[in-house]
Length: 228
Image (cartoon, rainbow, N blue to C red):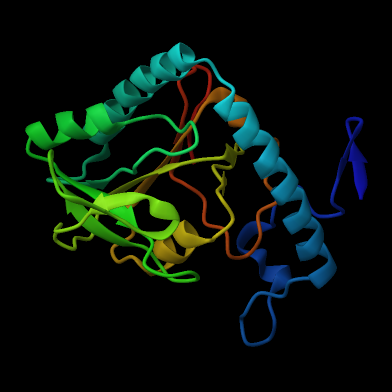
């Protein structure tokens, strides 16, 4: 462990070097120190639990106010993105996440194709099913709803809730690796936007070779909106 600013962190780099060229084997695959990876995994688990507990304890009105600002910022990003006729993946909120379901209705009414991600199995990429207002819902892994009859689509924009995030736009999620696996195989690469509350900000998540940064991280605070 390393002490930084009075706090203990794993003995790992604060961020990965560009392209991680010094962390590659001769065949080009990432070289990961097992002890470092274990320290980072333990730290992330503790931070994940702390951040989710803090998020769930936020006042309901505060979360609602933050979500309204987030929705406005998302509209601005989409308008300026240059993505034509976008299919937008949002998410079904759980555990105190910003509730963008009203915004999903607004998008759908404006003619935008809206999708929800579906985790079909552990250690597998997500799929995306088209959502419409009043769609019949089924429940997948962890009983998260998804459109039971929705057409499979490939989103041009992926909006993902964050448990934590850093200024390099790396996202701390729930630990299953679903979004990283998905973004690694989606073609063309979608515009990716992480959303959360200001309290989710971390100095670093100690990114590992499998982590893929977001293009944007948006919170309800005007001082925390990053484009990477």
